[in-house]
Length: 143
Image 1 (cartoon, rainbow, N blue to C red):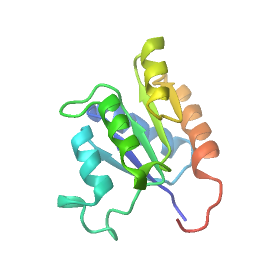
Image 2 (image 1 turned 30 degrees about the vertical axis):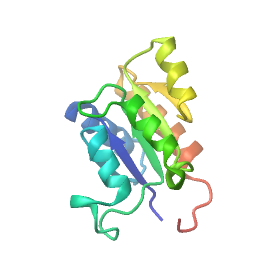
Image 3 (image 1 turned 90 degrees about the horizontal axis):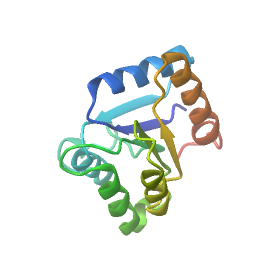
Image 4 (image 1 turned 90 degrees about the vertical axis):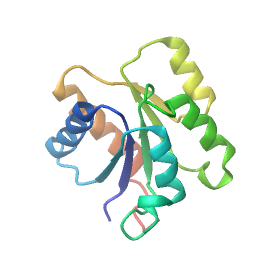
């Protein structure tokens, strides 16, 4: 079973690089991208354009950018922590910011990890291999 990843990131370029890295790593996870935290909330609740759960199933992993319009990564993490149904969803902050205070805040708000977006594609390929091994390859029964 292919695990679904919800990728919340306002950068189309970063989204394309992430997809390319998964393909180069030989990983066939389904990646659904939303461009801001508000869309991520709608997806997670299954409302609006995401109401059909056959087409838009609940994700197995959320990759979350920090700086996004409408609802940023911190706000989304805070919201996720307030919704009991979503507390088990692993959230990985994937940001270009290396600021230690951002890392600390993301973890305090419930992010399982905070990863800095690498500058080189080959490093991103290695990052997605590690993400897959840690968060997506275990317990592959239907969720």
